[in-house]
Amino acid sequence: MVVYHADRAAHLREDLVATLVQAGVLAEGPWAEAFRQVPRHVFVPRLFVPAPRGGWVAVGADHPDFLSLVYRDDVCVTQLNGSEAAWEQAAADGVVHGVPTSSSSMPTIMAVMLAALDARPGDTVLEIGTGTGYNAALLAHVLGDGAVTSVDVDPDVHARAVRALAEVGRHPRCVVGDGERGVPEHAPYRRVLGTCAVSRLPPAWPAQAEPGGVVVTTLNRPLGAGLLRLVVRDGAATGRVLREDGRFMPLRAHRQAWADEALHRARRAPAAITRPTPLPARTALDPLSGFEFFAGLALPGVAVGLDPVRLVHPDGSWVRHRGAVVDEGGPRRLWALAEDAHRRWRSLGRPRRHRFAFTATAARQWFALDGSELTWDL
Ligand SMILES: C[S@@+](CC[C@H](N)C(=O)[O-])C[C@H]1O[C@@H](n2cnc3c(N)ncnc32)[C@H](O)[C@@H]1O
Image (cartoon, rainbow, N blue to C red; front, side, top):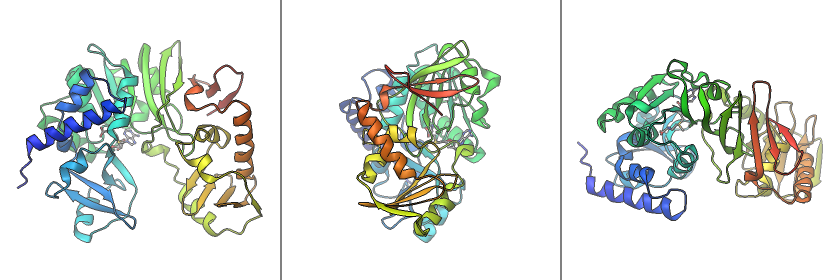
């Protein structure tokens, strides 16, 4: 039997809150108090951590570092490949390989999204992606069980979350379903929070928000992902890309399933053209680079691979970046587009992500650069 050291867990929570407050992503107040009170380890009773040579290692509650891993400001991966059996397999075999399909998100991103959501007592919230139930517990802690509806597509994930929520005495409404549809039965909501990333804003989300309601979500874009905060009015959702970056696992139907094969081919494909480039890969690909968001606007639909750096597009275009030299193939020269975009970005005064507005109507979804006529369709 595992004996938790409640004092140690409380101490680690206090440290986590101090880290988030110091970083300026969490203000003292009800949400900080929720992070102090809600025990994340109940929602993450076991997790996967990256193995040094690739793949994932199972960490359970009897691991000496369990509590410190759970209370780091980091994502805790809790499911791979949509399978509940992967953890036991990793525990038995040492390492498993797979794609994360459920997790408890990084506390910094959770705090940023909760601040952007700006939900107050009296507000109702729809969360898409119940996951471990930890965020639903934070929401229910501040707003009350009756205010929170949360949906996950995976019945096993849902069942585990409901158990953990009950263990901490919380009973928000949790349902199994495709969150892309929202949860119309209990709409409208004052706030909608997407905790899995979407390629486009699902129309059901603003449709199920009250007038003046707020939608916060992340965009599923390997290049130029972003956190969006939108206000719903007169059939449109309008708002901004937030200054903070946020990357989430995609809504299942929004996964770029074609990309694995294309990225694999681009490792060795013979190049149509090989040439020097002045644009380092990290300038376009590193989320900390000021250009990365703009690169995403110039190269919609691309997927990214590393070691070596590759970009691929469903139209068959690809680039392999080898330091000072690039190999390109397919119908379009993707890296030439990135280089053009970099010149344009500099001529526009190097606008960073939070200078972009976002609008979604029934007919169209697009970004616009502040103080200009420039728009980019999603
Ligand atoms: C990053 S996790 C959410 C984290 C969660 N809010 C928490 O606090 O632990 C993303 C979740 O989205 C769920 N998901 C993926 N596609 C979905 C869909 N179409 N509808 C609802 N949930 C979905 C996954 O099963 C996964 O549990």
